[in-house]
Image (cartoon, rainbow, N blue to C red; front, side, top):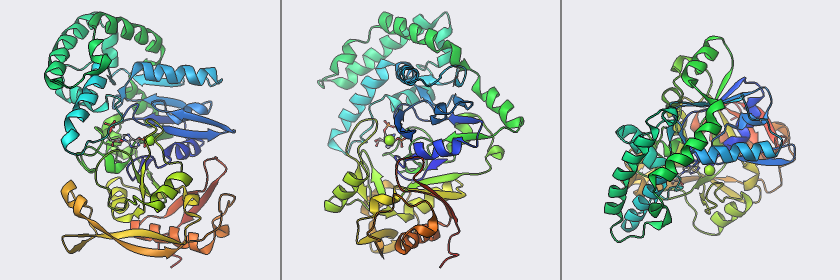
Length: 435
Ligand code: IMO
Ligand code: MG
């Protein structure tokens, strides 16, 4: 399951629904920048690092080595779940290969964003995600979860803190470094992380081998993508992206699972567009319509509470990410948010320097100059959150879904018309068939 936009596609709800027919649920990239909301049994759960499958008994949850792990944050999630009666024990495995986020990563995240003040900042979630992935690729200053149990762990922390302190002082110049920078004390950090390591010990495993064994045994595994494909480090709107492969192509590398085991991919889209943070967003509506979508869709970040930028559905982008991610079918989320509108637009092409294109640009500067070409469809102007069958949706709502499906070239399998598990329409709805 992959988000096809810039994140926040309501993936949490889809994972929860799909979990019913899976034995194992896997988080394989990203970190505590993700915010997944699941509403079940009248309760709302906000999960970040732990797969949403944790809410169902008998489901094995796995956090693989492709994830960057913030120990206090995952421990906080574990405590929060347990205090609400959710069992977290052997049903949660965490890879010993996962790279660990340390306080210096948060300081670096803030400083890098500060340094971009003159250009457009990426607008990261400040969770240290980019700096931790940078250290992973750079190798010399990286610490993996398994390293926390080694005899030389303290020594490593001391060496890295000495190195990072010099870098941070140099980048900071006269910028305020904030309190965390002053608190980069190797002994304290090492002692804190040794405690976290003790608490995490029962969950730590070689998840690559576990998953290979599981798949070879024919069990059903669900891979839960975080963020969205347009934020993919290699194939998204670089540099306004996250630091991992958040499109479908990231599953294999993040989880250590060969592509031959991926037999069905669901692409999750919101019925309109949103983006949080910087970077171009051709269909953005920085006006009353955008505010209407923000209010109705409660478009405020789960992690940072930032108001999300809102706009029309960008089918040029979604068609690209559906192809890139190998998507079989679509889940269209938050359709009810459009219910009051008289007209609804879909971006079907861009005009860049007077040329009409339907290929998603590889260069962010081109995307910045792209002017959306819209197709306008009539709205349905009635509430739909009680609807449970495709045939009970107003004809104009069906027409909108048909058109999305047709342009993206994938059938719509699921339509969501509210946050609750019940507010879901199962709809295999082949593209073009009804037209
Ligand atoms: P979920 O899983 C929406 C965005 C940030 C920023 C950029 C880089 O809830 O859909 P980072 O902290 O990752 O270095 O920030 O990516 N971003 C998200 N936007 N949903 C998310 O996750 C996001 N995770 C990161 O806003 O623009
Ligand atoms: Mg989010």
